[in-house]
Length: 266
Image 1: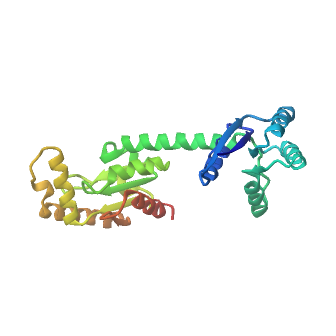
Image 2: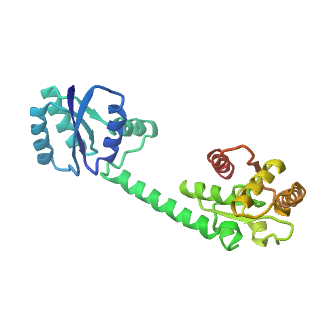
Image 3: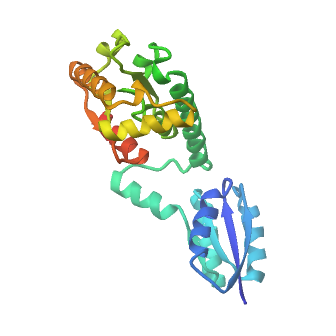
């Protein structure tokens, strides 16, 4: 079996180069790959030590370096020694710079910093969705990026989790004839409330399944008459709120989440 050595050289953790390399390597069968990763390479001498080692192994070098002087050293050495080398980031950086006429930061580890900030944002959004789910605390209505309203079993809670995983803070408010509509809803900035609806027949089946799962008999909660009453009440509330309404019937949660994002970002 043919063997190929891959050098990953990065001025940070090398995760970007590693993942992109893996995406390329998986397209080849019948080859054994040995991957060697060199991280936090921000010094010319350290880089030269790695390149001299590479000369004896003749690897493919995959790199994510932002320091132009280090890039020049690597390119010059690899060209002279006929070593294949792949720049995983600078083609994109240079193209964006030319398109925007902006100068790139060329700050090592900046992508990882942004990635960690994104993770923190998603965690906060998930915590928010759980805290302000199902009308638990109306104070969350004005703090939310989007407020989901609808009758029971119209996917408010799972959509809140998916939106949270996208970094979007959502609150949800249940609608039912017996429940007062929180006055906070009527002072929410336009475009931040989204109504959720469902076909009566499908919703009856969903509620019936829920009752069976809980070991409870079918009753008023899953009856078509009760559901139609709730849907009509919800329709009137949503009309008063002036919010867009999405029919969740036969739609995946991912599709619904993207529809919601497109609505609130208009």
